[in-house]
Amino acid sequence: MSETVLMKGNEAIAEAAILAGCRHYFGYPITPQTEVAAYMAKKMPKIGGTFLQAESEIAAINMVYGVAATGHPAMTSSSSPGISLKAEGISYLAGADLPALIVNVQRGGPGLGGIQPSQSDYDFVTRGPGHGDFHVLVFAPSSVQEMADLTGRAFHLAWKYRMPAMLLADGTMGQMMEPVNLPEPCNAFGDDNPWAATGTEMKRPHNIINSLDLSPENLEKMNFARFERYAKIEETECLWEEYLMDDAEICIVATGITARVSRNAIVEARKQGLKVGMIRPITLWPFPKKVLAQAADQVKAFLCVEMNMGQMKQDVELAIRCKKPVALCNRVGGMIPTPDEVLDSIRKIAEGGMEA
Amino acid sequence: MAHHEIVIAGFGGQGLLFIGKVLAYAGLVEQRQLSWLPSYGPEMRGGTANCNVILSDDPVGSPIVQHPNVLIVMNTPSLDKYEKAVVPGGKIFVDSTLISRKVERDDVDVYYVPATQMAKEMELGNLANMILLGTVIRETACIKEETLEEALKHVIPARKMNLMGVNLKAVQAGKDYRP
Image (cartoon, rainbow over all chains, first blue to last red; front, top):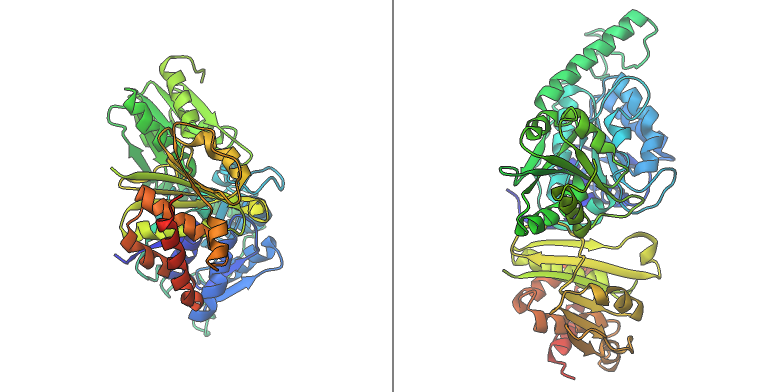
């Protein structure tokens, strides 16, 4: 393991991407993710990589598409409004079965919203951020260490399944510094990508990278095939963390910064004799449905702690088939729930006073 | 178990994030659990800036400090904003050159340090922040004295390493200060 260093979450993403072998970054500045671009601007030229500040978010994602088509790892990063702009390009990446990493350090919305942290892009990105039937892999880091670790994993799986992956953080995770052990350098991508447009040298048929297919029969086949891959991913690639779930009667479900806040509330609740635990989804698509369904047989109620109007709560209700009540503790617009607020919600549920 | 939840607050440009970083790097050198969280965005451009630092022997949960046990303030709006949040028995460090009012709480320890005036008299430029840090280290032992210099090596940019001496001098002045 490497030496422990202190880094901002945004910087950890950038360094981890470089260590994973990414040499192409395209972006456009927006708070609160600009440190990703700043770090890349400093580092990429020194290691023979490309840093390019595009004329817009749309241009940046299409540059990613171009590099991905040649079989090379590429990434872009932005924050919520910028991700909306990238949606078309993400759909094209999915339609052309191209791997890429998109980082979204969320801020309050809708519209231009604000610049303080938020989790309100949950529905947008977990349903496939763009038109058409597709998914992207979505990872929700909850520490600077995970910002680094999940960047490498996102790249790896994007490559393995030939699909876009998204790192879904928020302003707090991006701006905070924590100790981090950076991963060892590797090349998760290999040079042998038989699907890539690398020049045929007259030795093989052309590889055509395209998301257009005017034959409905073919397009249907492509969609079915893609969803077979998605089914396999849902089966094998879910990640989550359980915290004090062994004897839990109330299960908190939270990700990213709200999972950190919830941890404080759980410690306090336990001191008061309340049996609370947490399931923290680390992949938001695929969503760890099975572990939640199992927990539904054990706990009396669930509590979603979110920085949106309860978007993930719906996924929890679906996962547990509404077997148990699911309550919500939330703040929006750039506000972050406090441990006291979460504790209040826990107490209300324990006293049977909180309607789900 | 040592556990310090620190809020550092004042105007942008007073070096609040800087002393937060010094504390964070000291924590790193001491192999402790820690987090450093700055305010960001328009707040930092001329308005109030603040920085949350947690140093602990246990893993850090939320990096957001709701109830600090150490508060360092360098302007009156910050004292107004955070005074009530400090836990009973906590410690408040006030730059008494810049803040004329007294702390109203009587269940906390308060240290008034005329840091800005001291920096001026000792020709330490804008190192009032480091003077305050010296008093904080003496009174809270949140970091070890011997790790300070190592931490500063991480925080002071390489091209400004010649400023190490004055920084250490400022910290020492804060350590030595008695009203």
